[in-house]
Image (cartoon, rainbow, N blue to C red; front, top):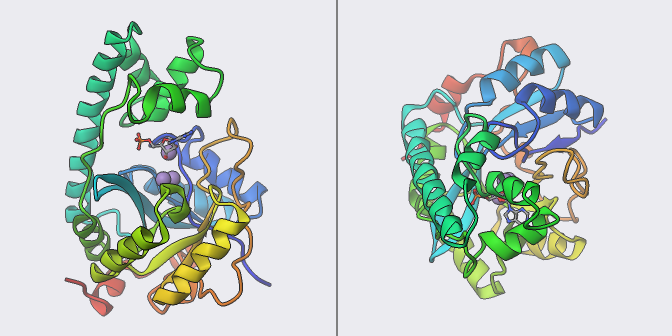
Length: 300
Ligand code: AMP
Ligand code: MN
Ligand code: MN
Ligand code: MN
């Protein structure tokens, strides 16, 4: 019997709306066997998810979605099977969350100038102690009637040339992959078809990603059309990258993306879980051997 993998999902520890425990329970309902928790720039939900995994009987992969600035664009890199205890990873992610805090203040100031008051405070409330993302501003703006839904609110307020936009100053590709690898993990370019890169630009991104030791491409994503999946499968094969799949689930209020609803890979893909470095968390075995993982495949 084949297992169902969803290797990209968010909780309330970033901009998702389910707690790590609720997410794991939802994974069971959705017949997901292997779930990666990949919150933006934090692994703070991993410990709770692993506890819930033991109770519920779902395999949880400790992960993170790292914000990267590449060529003045924001790119997301998913780290899978990272050791959440790794000091260098934690220090790197803490720096990104500092930027998030400063950016949130600046978004608040810019919205204020556009006549929208109290946004920073409200976004902080929506974040509920997690570091603030654009989604938290979006929820406030929708609640205040400035837009009808997420898509519209982003388009009118939170993207380039709009009142609440602040450009990202995130990690470099080299930094992000260094943190992931030295925490024993594998790096995957998240939703590669979502960046509106030309084929040439995407090849350049993949080239630089592989020079940094990157191993995977998220061929199947909740944010991809079927055509995108096929195009990304071609890129993965051409570059001999492993293929990953994830819904990028953020919660039930985005009904067009459901946890575990990931299409099968186009033919010719090598799933990342078939790579020899993959270690499936097994609660019955008391976890997986993170430490020996690091000993066996030391990086950089
Ligand atoms: P941030 O990392 O705080 O800049 O926010 C990025 C997040 O915003 C993504 O992970 C999505 O959850 C959300 N997002 C970005 N663009 C859109 C969009 N056009 N519509 C809805 N959500 C979006
Ligand atoms: Mn998000
Ligand atoms: Mn993303
Ligand atoms: Mn994501």
